[in-house]
Length: 88
Image (tube, rainbow, N blue to C red; front, side):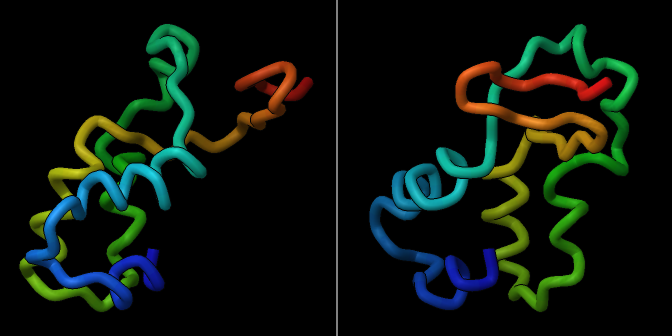
């Protein structure tokens, strides 16, 4: 994330498309809400996990929009053949 922010201009054309290709497609998976419902809390919002980064207000606003509805859910794993699962 830090590399993405430092190597891109906030007002760059097609920034969201680049963000989708470089960040979302590599690190985000779509899962059924019912399978993680108990873990969906404000603390688990992806944008809250970026608070340690030193970002301008413009970047914070842009990333808050980009990460809306995305949560970081611990206790699960991802396998390209199996998908998203909770290890036993």
